[in-house]
Length: 427
Image (cartoon, rainbow, N blue to C red; front, side, top):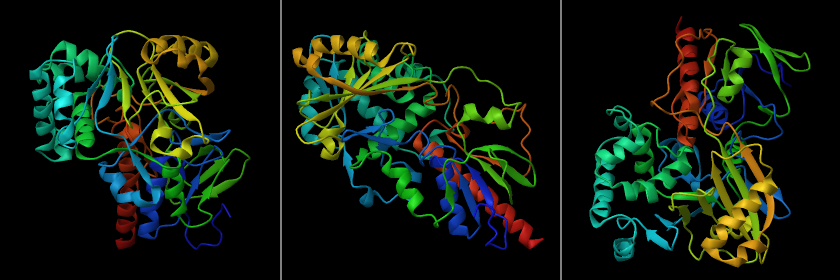
C-alpha cells in the first residue's frame, strides 16, 4: 500500500526512479529506513532505459557505463550485468580515411598503430601519455579541486595541437559532454579522462536499461510504484495526481532538473541544456570490424560519433542483423527522424560506401535535456532557492552530468537523511 499502513513508521518518499532515486533507495534500505519510490513513467531508469523494438535493443540515446566510476563499483554487480567492453581508443574519420588512436597503456600492441596514425603529431601522442599520468597521479576527488578553465583551454595548456583537438578531442569529448565548443569545465574533462584510463567503457549485454533494473531488483518488493505522478507536497504529506495523499518522513526530489520548477517555482531557468539526437539503423552487416567507437574528425558534417552495439553483444540485434547507432549533437530538433536519417546516410556514404543506403531506420530519439550545463564543476545549488528542511534534492545536476554524478548524488541524499534520523533518535 502506498500509505505504508503496514509499517509503524512513515516512509521517506523518493520522487523519481532514475539512477539517483534508485541509489538513494538502496542506501536507505541498507540503513533500515522505510521509503517509497514514486515514478511517473512506466519503468525505472529515467534517462537510462532500453526499448525492445522488433528484436533490436535500443538504448534511449547512445551511452556507456564507465566501470571505473566509484559509485557504480559500489552499487552495481558488474558480473550480473554481463558487461561487454569497447576497445580503448577510437577509429577517426578524417574526411579522407580512417585512422586509429588507441591506449597503449592498456593495449600495448596498439602502440605502433597509434604512432603511425595520421592524426596529430608525434609530440601530441606523447602528450596523451602525459595527460593520462596527470589525471591518474592524484585522487578522484582532488580533480574537482583543481584550477578551472574550459576543456578546450585545458587541452591547449597540455600542449596539444589544434589538429589533434579538432580531429580527436572535439568529437570524443563533444560526444560525452554533448557540446562541440568544449566549453565544459576542465575538471570534467580530467575526471572523464581518468575514468576512461582507469577502467573500461562497457554495455550490459541486455542493454543499458539493465542497470536500473538491477538496482530496482535489490529493493524490497512494493517499494517502487510506477505510473504515479506527484502533484504537490508539503511538510506533512505528498499529494498524487489522483488526489491520494501519503504522509511522509521526508522527501527526496530525484527528478530531472527541468522538472524541479513544478515543485520549486523559484528554481532558475538556466537556459537550454545540452541536447542530442540518436538514430538507430538496421544493417545487413556491421560497417566496422572492431568493438570501437567511430568519431567524426573531419571538422564538418552532422554525425559526431557512431557505434555498433551488436558488435559487443548479439542480444542487441536479431540474428543476421547489425544495430548501428548514430549520434548527432546540437542538431535541428524540428527535423523529423526520417529527414535526419536521409541526411546522415548521405553523409556516411563517404565513410562506409554505398552499403549505407541499404540501412533501414529503426527509430530515433530526440533528447533535449540530456545533461546539465557544466561550465563550472561541481554544480552548485542556486542561492536564490530556499529548500525546505524536509526536502532533499538528488540528481546529476547536483554534482556533474554523468552516471557517477547521479549515483553519488542519490547516495549523498540518503546519507543526509540517515544523519537526520540519527540526530533525531539521539534527541
